[in-house]
Image (cartoon, rainbow, N blue to C red; front, side):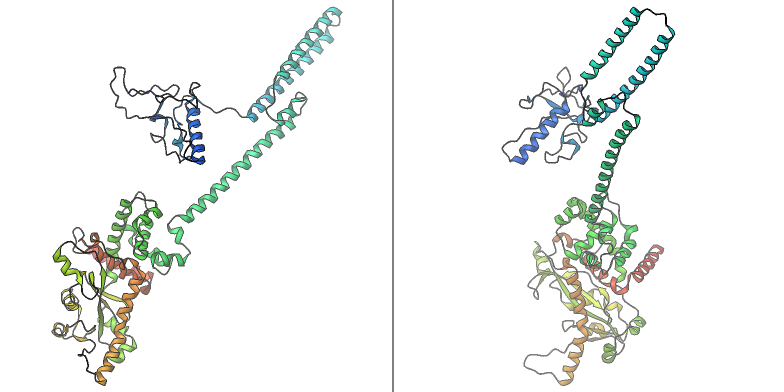
Length: 538
């Protein structure tokens, strides 16, 4: 069907004169309907929109009650090329606004009044000059006959009557113009200037009011946006949303990773870091985060993945094996009393729930008898003063503690004379004995057999010291709620070009963030900068 734009002066057609459709990229849209049976609010809104369309088209033959369906408006008259949603009344495309071929802007009453005053003031000045000239001519022509003088007076009176008649035909626009109509010729210039200043003052007050309202709305909007200003000078918000103790450490972390973050059209770099920390900390649903940051699901997922990669690469050096002299210098007194200065690490394993895989072999490898479900197991090592010094990759829940310890690379960091504190499930004395290191585990006995007094004291002392690793694991799991969830299969797939999974990176980043408050922002930044320089040199 051939469509033609109904706007006055618009010659856009959908087909040429031969009936062939033109590929001009334009579309045609009909007038909106008046929806009277869907509620009073929608009825009033659609009525206003229909009237706005009729007024914008500007054709007197188009009536509100009967608009034919073949009357269309082309996309040239909309900013986005199509009408907006009917509920979005503030959108400029709520009705046609472009290339309408007419202008509905009319002069205001005050403008007409000002022009009228100017015209009448000019007429009064010209009349006074004419009267002065006539008086001079009358004084000079003393010999003029009385009949000629009477004829001149009669003509002047006729001209005066015409002016009075024209003045009576004009109607004032406002009360101020009514007051000005009486004795316009004798009104002083100061009073006219006072009237003009009154209108200028009214306009100036309205402009100032709108500017102040705009500033207040911008201030309220900035408080609602999730950015640096939202968290600045509010330690409680920083700790709740990110898990970090203060805004200074958050800003130091952001400045460390900012040069390596990719650019995004919809999110700033600070918002990318903030949404990643919020997801780790609070485990908010992705759809909820999309509404908070006003982005699509794909944009948010890509931003989380990219930021997680940068945090993993830059914060991984935080989890490092300390030198022996550093351990001995910071050895707590309780460890010195029991084992001297030989304790190097306290090890334990923790498990994270995962989705059930479809492959039978993967199901057998990931099922944990201890938890009674499918899990991923990680080995964690803690120094005597409480910092995390080792994290293994993820293993299936069926893997034993001994198997993980012997194959995760932990034993290669031990030195002769080191003492390792572990639970009774870590039966690795034979493996560690080859390196001249010692493993201390609680004494394990069969049922119905009592321990000796010495074994009881040794086991109690070991349990009191080994509990530090459980406190660290509990703190990490309580602070970052994402470690409580059942991990989807997508996070268990190896990253492209790497041997670690997305879940491994999540665990590494959570452990590294747990160390940030302990080391301090300045020390953390210096350590990461030094590591970056060494990496660049290599």
